Length: 354
Ligand code: NAD
Image 1 (cartoon, rainbow, N blue to C red):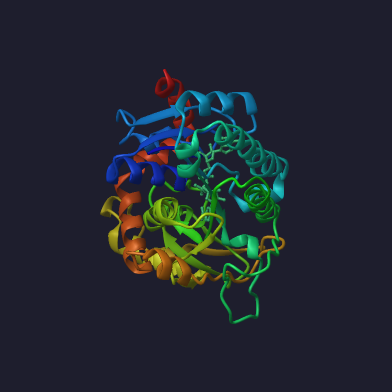
Image 2 (image 1 turned 135 degrees about the horizontal axis):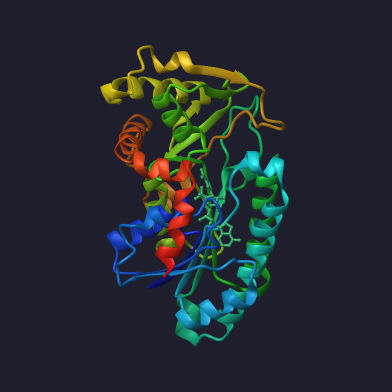
């Protein structure tokens, strides 16, 4: 298969690209605009592989996208490109509307035009896999249940509203035009190559540097945490074995309060940090409670029973094993972190593209 991956330079997209190149015989065309969240240094291990290609394209740019489709002739699309940070969506929703809604619409239209021109066997084989979030289901505050594939949508933030909109478009393109789509809604991911503005890497790096560990409100928010490589494996499983028009929820069976996640990170940093870091007090003493995010959902929790029963996928990492791997990865890759933090990863792009 030749798979066109959008957003392949991001956190999850790069894990998907590395997974496909390392574990399958498939080819990948990575279509990424390279926003602040796109980092080609996360793809260093595959950059020279003859089965990997990179195209710097904005998914809102219909002509450029069509050119990529008709030049590369993919068998499938995995759509991960998105603006993904809730705090940024509160400060500036426009980019979220543009990329997550207009970009998904543009991608659907280009994919539909391309699919319509394929021969019978190509049309039969083609898949459009839309990667979405559990945040579209809204807040489980005060409720015991879990999100299922039937849970009504009730997004709370500009980010989750824009993802919900894109999910509706994908569903409509399947129902109306017959485009062979698949959809997945996943819980919070953590793991290597995560941009340091997100909770887990931010806490690891601040703890290492002896900086405050900012926790929203009282840290009571509950999220279901999934190791990113388990997510990448789930996505490939759905692409290759999922039923057309179906949605699969993906989660890690790891409901944790943010404050407990931060304490677990602190313990690992205390245990694993090199002596040269010289922090003499426990990392947890750096925890600082800050004003809560507006509209902050209290609890998300996923029922991943359908993908487990129907497609045989299950997470391989527990929260404990995945978090230990993650802290170890950050300690071993401080150079990658430093280059993100000082912005030099963006300067590398010209060289990487040449
Ligand atoms: P990310 O922010 O790390 O990466 C997004 C990537 O998309 C970047 O490489 C960026 O350059 C690219 N991009 C942004 N706008 C683009 C545009 N207009 N055209 C082309 N490329 C563009 O995001 P992530 O955390 O890797 O998330 C990937 C997908 O998974 C998103 O759709 C997100 O909604 C979804 N998701 C994320 C999580 C999570 O915990 N991170 C959980 C569930 C679902």
